Image (cartoon, rainbow, N blue to C red; front, side):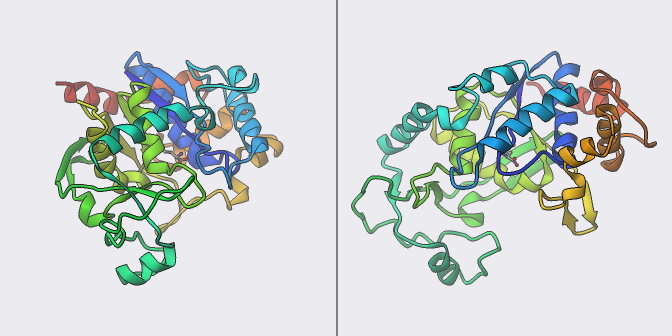
Length: 305
Ligand code: GLU
C-alpha cells in the first residue's frame, strides 16, 4: 500500500489539510503502507518557496513524517517529491499520449470556453472541442489537450461505494498544459500517481468529480489497474461552504502561534470532521487507533481483488 500527501505550496496548511493527513497517515499505518510526500507546485505562478518551507516545517511540528522523501530531502534542493523537479515524468507521459494521436493544441481562453459552453466561468466547464480538429501549429509552451473517448468510468470509492462518471460529458477533452506552459493538476497528478506506484489515493470530497477522468487518463497512459480511491468528508465552514486557505483562523501557523500543541490541533481536526466524538488532544501515533479509521481500513482490505 503506497499513498501520498500532496499539498500545493500556494498557502499555509490549514485544518482541512490536517484532516486529510489524519486519513492518509492513519490508513497507511493501519494497512502497513507507506506515505509519500508530494509538493504539488505544478502551478508555478501561485506556488511559493516560503509556503513550501512552512508546509515542511508544520509537518515536522505535527509529527507527521513522510516515509519518503523526508522533509529534509526537500530542504536540500532538487527533490523528486516536488513536481517542479519531475519534468521528465510529464514529458514521457505526454509522449505516450502523442504516440496515440490524442494530443492537440488548443487556442481557447477560459472566457471563450465559458461562452461556448454556456456556463459561467466559475462552474465546471465542459470543453466543447472547439480546437479538436483545427490542427493548430504547436509552439513552445502551447496549451495542449488530450482527446477523451466517450466512456463510463465505474469505480468503488472506499467511503462512497460504487460510483460512475462520464468524463467526456463532465469536462470534455482535458487540458494537459496551459497557455503559460504549466502542466495542469489533472495531468501531473495522474502521471505522478502512476510513476510513483500510488495504490491508494486518499483525499477530500472536493476532488470526487475528478476521479473518473483521472482513471481514464491513467488508462490512456498505460496504467493497467487504477488506484483505490477514498474521498473523505471535509470540515465545513457552513453547510455549503468548505474551509479554505483564506480562512486564516484555521491555518496551522496561526493556531500554532496561538499556543495550541500539535496534539490539540490533530484532535481538533479529527473532532471537526466527525472522526471523534469528543474534543481533546490526539497525537499522531494514536491515529491508527481511531475506530473510524480502522473500520475504513478494513473496508479497503475487503476491496482488494
Ligand atoms: N494538491 C491537491 C490539493 O492540495 C491534492 C491533489 C490530490 O490529492 O489529488 O488539494
